[in-house]
Length: 395
View 1 (cartoon, rainbow, N blue to C red):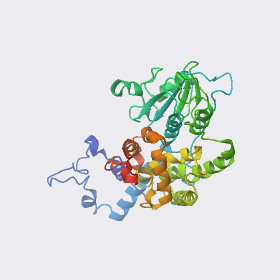
View 2 (view 1 turned 120 degrees about the vertical axis):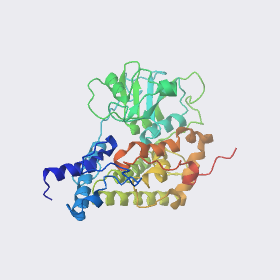
View 3 (view 1 turned 90 degrees about the vertical axis):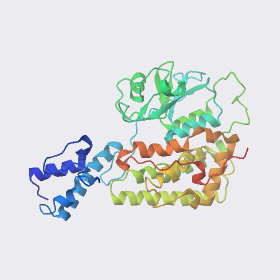
View 4 (view 1 turned 180 degrees about the horizontal axis):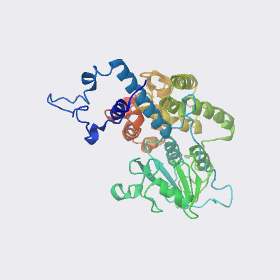
């Protein structure tokens, strides 16, 4: 469409919705609530049809909005040329106990996690299931607030929320912490983040590595909890199941863990269709496996189950409705064996899994913070475990 300067300006004002800043162009953009008591926006369709045909106006506004939306999406989630989400990697690959750099030492390491994030949830789960105490590994909860954060979305909020949300290194947000433990860092400031407080170095910011190392590490404790030989502490990666766990992790990540994000962050139809098909295939595969076994790799809970659990807990509240993962109105309860598995996980270890997540906060965060996917900022009615189909724990 060939547009003169004034019409181009007119369309830019539509896209940016400058009525929010009370900017009106005299004679062109009438103020809201003008006379009728109803907000009709700029009243464009009623006032400009003689100047600009509605079809051209709608098409141009739609194309302009799509262009701006795709730019926002690319900032949020890097895109391939086909409009598919390409997850960036900024891995730090240290490991506790495998070298003199990060020795097994109680009280030396600190984990930073945020409740909404499924990758952080993995780390919280391994800490809980392995029964690490706070004197063995410290943990700080991050608050998701991209408005306050200087880069990324995580900030500390110890002043209003208490010590659980305070950084022991005194940082304001995760970017400042990254700068302290990795000066000159240029990548995305992601969590979970495991830090060596003694040397002020990053051990790892990759959830799969953190889970694997915390499963095998042995940190001295002032209590008898998780001492070597403690039969109440599960081995999440037993040698005899290692190959099966690795194989399961591969398809769970591709089809489900990352598949739901490929759905939500796609910017072209073909990319979304492929990702959505993968999610459906992953759910059907999980249903088939769990129809024969209590857990993904047999009769014991392993690392493979831990890696799937955060995705399934968020599926009905965020990934299905907001990300359109697997299509419209796809729910966990549509897969009875997956739901039964989720209930087993939810109830295991005297309910310790329940303590690792605030489901409503996790779900609502997606609607609060992912502006390009929910520009109006409306948050759904509070979401709970019962909405997934989970039964409350019996007293």
